[in-house]
Amino acid sequence: MKSEYLITLILALVVGYLMYLVMAPFFVPIFWAVVLSILFYPYFIWLMKKVTASKSAASLIACLTIAVFILIPIILLGAALVHELLNLYDWSEVYLNELSAGGPPSPSRLMTHIESLIGRYVNVSGIDLHSILAGFANDAAAYAGEGVKGFIKNLTAFVFNIFLAFITMFFLFRDGDKLFAIIMEVIPLSDYDKGQIVERNKEVIRATINGGVFVGLVQGALGGIAFWFLSLPGPILWGFVMFLFSFLPSVGSAIVWGPAVIYLLVTGSSVKGIILALWGIFVIGLADNILRPFIVSGKTKLHPMLLFFSILGAVNVFGFIGIVAGPLILSIGQAMIEIYQHYLKDRH
Image 1 (cartoon, rainbow, N blue to C red):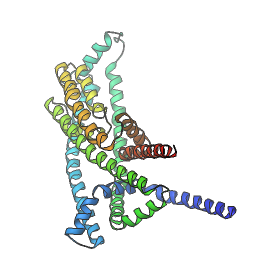
Image 2: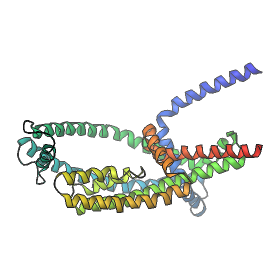
Image 3: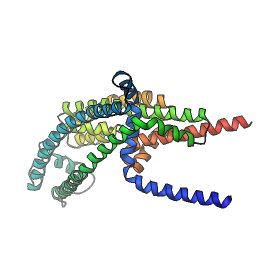
Image 4: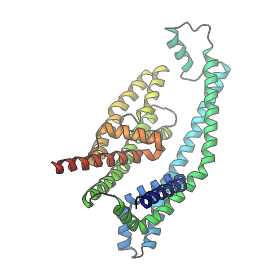
């Protein structure tokens, strides 16, 4: 009996490992399909009741309408970002040409201020800072060019992953309840504990996505308005970048507006730099510090510090999906600790 059990266990491990190898390339679209299906499941149920009783038809309608709801804003925003990138490229090209020619590096006279700042502490009379900075700028431009090539190369894979995500979401809507029942039956916990974990994870996903998107939109809009008001290049572009970084709590958008403050101070635009710093700390930062704990941490019952490190660590390991995967893993871990605590209390 023991040998049969051991053989069965070994075969299960081998098959499980082979399944992992087969499914690993598709973890990202599958993960986002699961997240979106959980977020939009109430909408799917509404379609089932109001539109059609057929699960296949309701699943197809749900996937198509969700795709329109998500992709059209992305396309419109992408067009605006391309326009901003072209404007930013024109600005940087003029700046690099002036810098390479050794003339005034721009209306802001960036090099003059840098030389003055460094010259307070080091003798720079024998150093050609113009050539050094021009070399750095050319290297950065070459690196950016390679990044653009990589982006174009990966665009096909990105579109393919989106297609896979919506195909997976269709089957999750249609057959997800059967799959969910099988998974729940396999988990070796009581029905109460399993229900608690599932409900908590649903709340984590909703709070992380809905709350994160809302906070990101607020911070991105506030940051873009500040860049536009201060006549900084690419307000829509940098507002969008702030939106992306805002998913990292506490420090997210500061990664963008912080260097902009330093740039303004170094180039002599001290008033603009102080205005942006105050706006970033007391307006953008306050929006993050007030809204995020209320929406995300408050609803998920996860400590803000643990939430912060879970997102950072998961993004480092899993990429962009770590924004959701980190809080999910933290939530499951916290739930398991609570279950163990209840087990110890019951024993005593």
